[in-house]
View 1 (cartoon, rainbow, N blue to C red):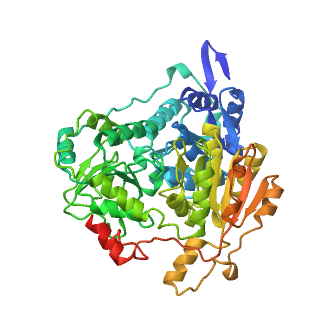
View 2 (cartoon, rainbow, N blue to C red):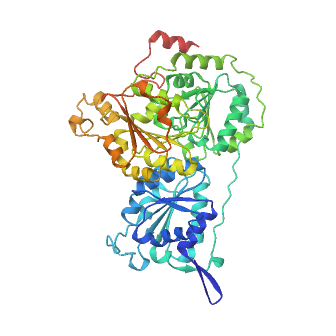
Length: 576
């Protein structure tokens, strides 16, 4: 690891990088070997009592696993991949980390500095040479190629701190092979100085707004989901007795039966959540960027006469306003809640019946979303699911059905590709969650998404990962098929068996990987025995082909979702 020359203790750069990760309490790296990362891989071997590489079978899977690992562990995720195709295979996962604000350090290998094309206007000089830094700059907080071995400490410290401070996100360090194998004097390396930015806000003004509100509601987003923020938010809700709704990506922020929980809002959200939000006079948005999936394409979910307070760590998001007169607070949710908990509410103008009203709205509409057989299956699965089981969701109808139907228990968490919406996420994400928590995982996917990282069944099988893989199989790309039904006069193409899309025999696939398999065709087959998973199990649930998502955003305001409710019932609820 080190050698002594002229009384100077030196360390190989690749050893220094791995040692840095260990010092930052990073114990797990996801990745795949390649020619120009052999020195990094060998350095992990040297420290294998303190850190390990989890060998995925596609770099995209490594990037997804690192994302879910970071979210589940509360620490930074880490990935190693080789140059060219290896690095490029990470791009989708890097984008996922960028949009969902996940701190992951991606370490890519690069060809030797002396064979790179440099300023030459040629496409490539070294084999597999690719300028990954320029490719990922728009979707990273920091991306840099190491051009001098002595810069490694500065660049690692800078990348690490940028990933974790402010709005979190991914960083990438590209390390040429000759620099990986170079030796440096560890004691004389230049470090990176953290620039501390103090943020403050007028807590008294916010306190007055909350006290004067008749019908306040909290809108919690993914920015409020970390452990410290959740703990403070729970105290805040209890103290102020304010009901809450969430974004879809935060529907697991508290357990389903929390008395203040009114579900998630949005185009496919719970009707009772959207209606409750419409009836509030003050909305306190915490860590939520209010994208169009929540607000509707015209972003008219909140009329100008309402009071909107937005707490957001990213000042650029606050420039993307919903209301002209909204109150934007550029601060971390945790810091905001710490300040607000210092105040004692006196409920000057609070409607005493507000919590009863929202409770009645929820009780009237609670199971109206259960229009698909998938809802029934998923609701029953969540009823039997043990408290320590975690969920990973893929993208498509399965994800929305799960958000609508799962009844989250205390201790359970849900991991999804929210902003990017990448199919193929849930299977490798289940690996990341398990490696972080060592708890069983319920992976939910459609037949389409399941095929996109199917190779990770090898990892799951050989490492005996206790994952209950639930494939909701309608033998179609259901979300797009439904879109074609509504907007293209049912002219299906590449979305069904008859028009070019095919799903494999999942029983045979499970058998080929040595994984236990069970087929389910009716809800009576779901009971507690399917959760007896000391080893992986694949459960295929057969659905009809013409599945759909209901409710859905109509042509009018968001709380009038299609299909429209019975008019008399709707009028009665809106009168409350």
